[in-house]
Image 1 (tube, rainbow, N blue to C red):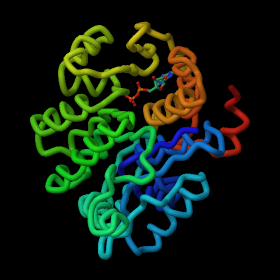
Image 2 (cartoon, helix red, strand yellow):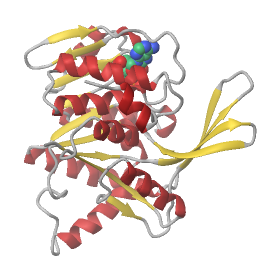
Image 3 (cartoon, rainbow, N blue to C red):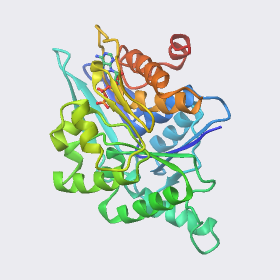
Image 4 (cartoon, protein in one colour):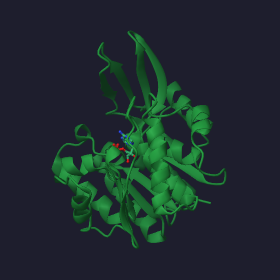
Amino acid sequence: MTDLVILGESMVEFSQREPGVFQQSYAGDVHSVAVYFKRLTSPGDRVRLMTAVGHDAASHGLEAALEQESIDTSLVFRHPTRQLGLYMVNTDRRGERSFSYWRSDSAAREVMPLFREATQVAGDGGYLPCGIAPRPDLFFFSGISLAVLTPNTRPAFWELIEQLHGAGTRIVFDPNYRPTLWSSVKETRAEYARAFQFAHLALPGIEDLSALYGVKSFDGACDFLNGFDIEELVIKDGPNGVCYRGPAEHFVEPVTPVTQVVDTTAAGDSFNGSYLAYRSQGFNPRDAIALAAKVSALVIQHKGALVDAEVFRHSITT
Ligand code: ADP
């Protein structure tokens, strides 16, 4: 049985269906990772989303949506005054999408102080030895998770990562680079260097590595990341295959290109959640990559990040 904790932000999503008509749901990179992990694992496996919400109706709606997907909400903390972040997906007459965000004061940015407060109580006046109890097997965070943490709360985050790492939790990191969430490339590189140093498994996309480090190929990515002590590397590059470099093998697994791409939202996140799920179910890296690529291929042939649960169940068989 695998116990995964995922830290980050889920937001309210308003997606335009026709002029003036929006469909409301909940989304975020880590939200998608959690959903696909849970859908592909056994009932005994657990995924806890570690985030913060408010007292508003949308926050209660998010918790209900997480529970609907059997995602554990025991690490969802409640901020006294802040609310959920929100974004809108507008589609123009030519079908081009644009995104507007209201997330700069979201509750999720304050997850670390709220977590500390909660564990202090639980730890009888002091911190629990490993912070999160019970200690998870895996801890996942992304570059977006890092970016949304207010800079003054990041030391508490790194302290938690260090505790978990020292206690034997496998640390998983996807850079998921969003330039607008960072004040400078220098800041991003500094934070990512720490993340790569702690990561047992990194799941970067070539696009992100190219934007940040000028790396443009699988070989270039491996060379760059060899500078860190990362046990397993799984490097994504859209339809151009997935590169794996682990302790015992190094290969590129081809991906069958999807000809009719509908919406690439959550391609990488669904891949991450699925890869972790298949690995935790005992698949070797090559098979887990092939199966995760099939899940991502399905996701990009549907609108939005989350494929309807019934459609998903019928489409994905291992
Ligand atoms: P990220 O969003 O992290 O940059 P990618 O764009 O590389 O990730 O996509 C993640 C995964 O989704 C890929 O590894 C691949 O399996 C799948 N994928 C993305 N685009 C395509 C495509 N056009 N055809 C088939 N699979 C794709």
